[in-house]
Image (cartoon, helix red, strand yellow):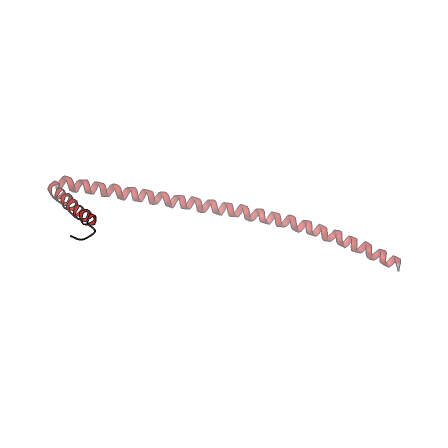
Length: 109
């Protein structure tokens, strides 16, 4: 009986060591998998960041082009129709003046 208990103890000890090794191996594999996921995430985040930057640059260039075009169109219109442009400016000034004046009085005339 003592031999059986000794054999059982030895087998349990060997089994415990094997489980410990398997646990260490699983931990190593888990660390490796987490490291791999971390690298993939950084790569994907970098790609998304680069793409967002590219879209922002495209949007900026588009807005700059559109504003340049609007400026050139407005300047051309003013050069071709100076009196008409002056009339529009005076009209807008009068309307703004009336709006400011009516606001200063509380909205009632």
